[in-house]
Image 1 (cartoon, helix red, strand yellow):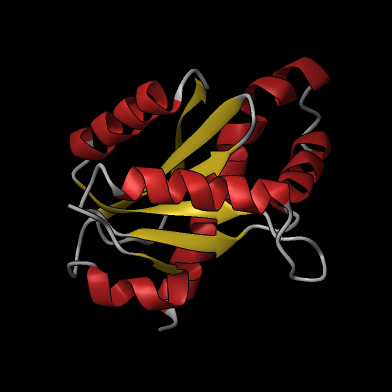
Image 2 (tube, helix red, strand yellow; image 1 turned 60 degrees about the vertical axis):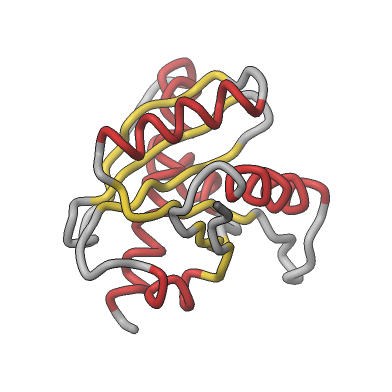
Length: 156
C-alpha cells in the first residue's frame, strides 16, 4: 500500500470523479487542515492540529480523511520564490513519502508560495486581532492551498 505522490495537475488520473480532498498546511508546530465538498469546488476549514509525532499526526489526518470520505490529500509545498526547494519543502516531501506508506489515497503537492502571507493580509484586512490570527492562520492557509488546487483541477 503506497499512495502516488504527484503534482496537482497530475492527480486527476488517480482520483474518482467525486470525493472530497483534504488540504494540509504543514507547519513546524501545527498542521492546518481544510476539506472540500465532494464536487471539489469549495474549500472550508476543518481544524488545526498541534503537531506531536509523525505517527500521531498521520493517524489524526487519516481519521479525518475517513470521516469525510476523502479521495485524496493536497499538501502545500513551500517553494522558495525562485522555485527552488529549501528545508521546509524537503520536510513536506518527507512527510508525503511517510504518509504515502500508510494510505492508498493519492497525495498531490501544490505550490503554496505566499499562501500564509496572503492569508495574513486577509485576516488583518478583516481586523482580526493578532491573537485570533495566530489561532486560525494555519487553518486559513490550508483553505487557501486547497482552494488554489481545486481551482487548478477545475481547469484541467
